[in-house]
Image (tube, rainbow, N blue to C red; front, side, top):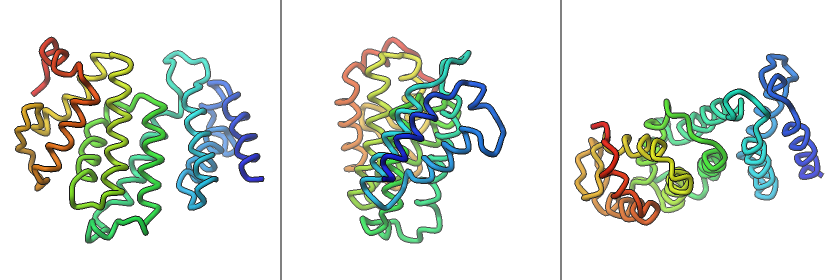
Length: 224
């Protein structure tokens, strides 16, 4: 029953025009989308959560006609998802190892983030914050489930740049790594205590995801 309800609301939300998304009314489509879909994006019930994530992705991937061609809810959704993940893994967690498979809500927040990142172009203004957070969660301070979930979000981000072959988009992401002093020659001097094994593992994955990275770096000056 609830899956049918999600489907019906999804169809109604996707059908709304640009002006409807910009409405400030308490019963506007934006409030329904945020309160219902994003609210259920971390539901403990696997089947419900899966259906909601599918709905969120479909909504964001089908923006109404508007001047920018971006979904009017994209930036707001990105901010909500980022803040949700940050809250789940924030300073309240005294010991990172305590965030385990038993803390499903934390992992579900990363799955929600991955879904949103796969449906939109992540806002440039918050790209650095996102990469820094994911790097932290990819470290050996966290268990394998959390690390894998964080790396999957990285895969989505780099996969978009690779598939679209958007040099500017790729440069935005790689700029972050250069600012963090992470380079493809495996030299690491970022101000964290991430083990070298973790960094090497991540760099190998980066090269596999972006086989054209070296060529693009040579032809595109980076901000350092």
